[in-house]
Amino acid sequence: MLLSLQASGVQVADEVCRIFYDMKVRKCSTPEEIKKRKKAVIFCLSPDKKCIIVEEGKEILVGDVGVTVTDPFKHFVQMLPEKDCRYALYDASFETKESKKEELMFFLWAPEQAPLKSKMIYASSKDAIKKKFQGIKHECQANGPEDLNRACIAEKLGGSLVVAFEGSPV
Image 1 (cartoon, rainbow, N blue to C red):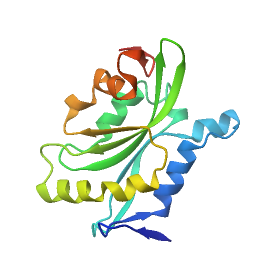
Image 2: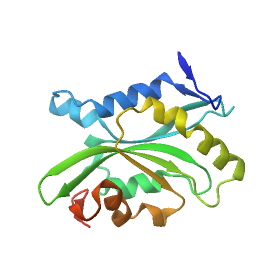
Image 3: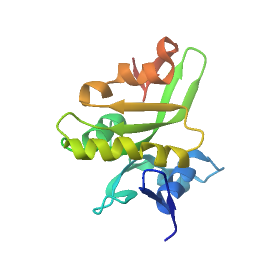
Image 4: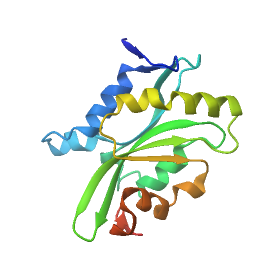
């Protein structure tokens, strides 16, 4: 496994970069390939706190939406731990008055109940992962569930221009 060393000393696993690229680049795909595309993925620090990795089992596939997941954003928020920090990518679907859009959002989840050391490591390592995620237009730091309501996310995506998020009016 090849890793990239960043200034904070925390590395970013190649798998994290591959997932970002796969979510960012939308190839012409068959319906089966589209179902396997990731809607949301959560990343964490490795147990030794030296590498940003994919958190096992913490993803939503496009094919899950409407089948096992009725509200993908609500499900995404529920996947975040109550008492520890995480990074995440979320493929947001939203509508403006003019058009429907899908854009990636980068999240730093740092809840109030997280240990101070965890908050410090995640905050100081954020640049390492963001440098790998070239082209992200939307970033959100959330410190609790109240920061992850639809109105807050709509504001990040385009403010008053956004009329719907994940199929629901804002």
